[in-house]
Image (cartoon, rainbow, N blue to C red; front, side):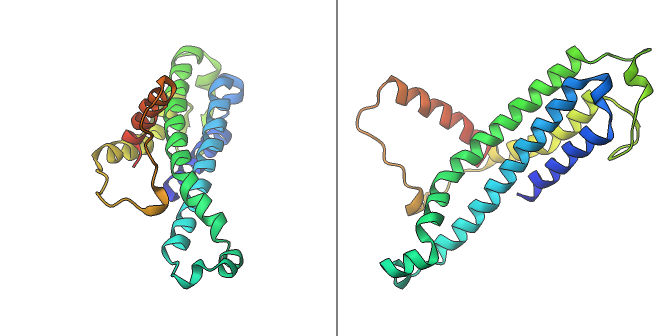
Length: 190
């Protein structure tokens, strides 16, 4: 969660401090979309951490009907069950957005020479002339680092009870397609 909070701040800072609105508005809007998506991912990850902490601290006495209502256990259980896939999908979407923004920066933004882009400069986080490809490449580095670490992780043999997903006996064509997409997303985010 802190990494995507920093990612959000970087994307907003580049979008605001490097005036791409005039020279390359497509990159400006792509940076804003990235900031919103990564802020959403950071909030989901913080909620998921709180929910998992709540669920892990439960005792047998906490599972009585009165205590469940008082403690909001059902709400935290839903969050603990539903948010991990949302986190993985949002992480994957951020990667797709970064690749799309890099392609847009290379195709739609003017290259070096006598263009408006060479006349504008960034104030922060890095000083100098505005280069959308460089700025987006710098934003790609933390995403790529997390994705590589996700590829290196292996799931433990221990299945948490609240994350159990039953597998049906017979799957149709739609179920196998969704399963394929879900397994590909799980590769880059643990």
